[in-house]
Length: 249
Image 1 (tube, helix red, strand yellow):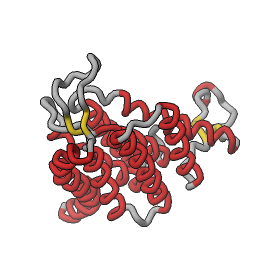
Image 2 (cartoon, one colour):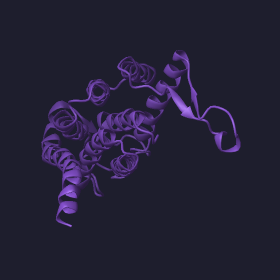
Image 3 (cartoon, rainbow, N blue to C red):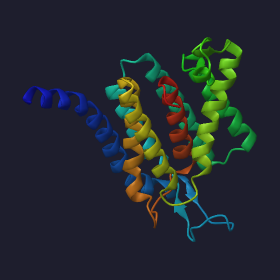
Image 4 (cartoon, one colour):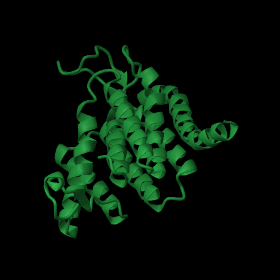
């Protein structure tokens, strides 16, 4: 019984520590982001009926989410070259979001830059190379997996990463919504990865969960800060990228 308990702790502790570091950094830096946002002009001013808030709000919470997740990944997943590629891609998409929060980017340019960030991941080996044959259960013979040519793999990978990135970006309209959905999605994918024996993927994804959860207490209604595009683009990008490494998309 004692050996089983020790074995359980040894398996669970790395996940707890990874999430805890991401949560702590994100939680500690969010108040700093609240103070910094007005000084650098990262404020969301309600100019139309689409916005639910009535007063100017800081929108630089992505800084805390980014720092918490990246620091945790760098500390606990640095021995995986593909995670390093994802860290670089995450930094690039975060930079795109920061520029958009501060200056405002044209939609077409922002979309193009998202494609570039996704292409960086593809070049680093983060690719959707195959899918399980959806007709396999009806076929006694035939391939279990369908493998894609390089060009098709590139297109599908970019569509997947850019699509999920913008999905999280587009739902960032209500207090706590985007961060909450990102935390639930990344937490579930981490759990599914553990069940599949993909502990590296699970560890990387739980860092995203911790980063999102650390920001949430300041983003629940009534929110004190928004994550901005820097946060929503980053969360969507990281969920999409890390899930490519695992079996759960």
